Image (tube, rainbow, N blue to C red; front, top):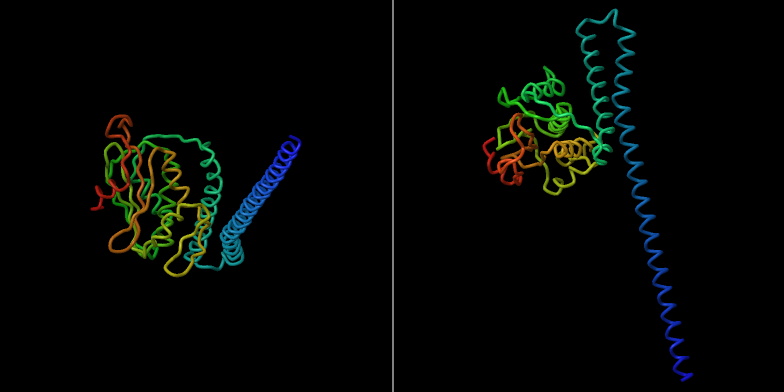
Length: 288
């Protein structure tokens, strides 16, 4: 009997030691994982701060440089030169404003706290406004809007402008010399397509281009333009307004970014209002 009790005690002691070792190992594993996660977060923060600092410094340096040049020579410069300098300052200030807007809107979007103010407005003039801002007259690329006149949508105008601006700027940065904004009705919604004739996007980049802080490659060379917020924000804004945004290849070359938006005066309930899979949308709009 004593031997049995002693043997049982030994077994229990060994089991306790094994349990303690496993618990310690699990705790060390959790601690290591937590440290690794914290390190990744720190690296992401440092990378973000570095990229934002670079992005802010570029337009600020340009604004300061051209403002100083104007201060010193505006009395003797030709009117055309003064206008050119002022246009550069205005465009860089606009770029700075857009960058700050994207940085501010991202955390509110992710937390679901971004207020939306839907209203009815005509879509085509808004698209023309985006083109005029991003690709002003005299630009070296051809930009066009092929959205039918009179198309009324119901959404937050400011955020639709932001979606279009981000998609159009992306096409300008990475596309070819032609960019087109087009669209057509689809059921109770409207499909907007921003396409370009550039090199397109490699298959392995399609998924990660909608991840924040990821930059696209331009051909074989990495582009340092942007901090990788434009496309993720555009998709999240489209989804926050009840639509969706996706990418598809453009034949024979180029990119197509598509998003859906609610049509004005059309109720969202009913069979026709059900969301369709992007593949169905692509099949229905191959002719765009």
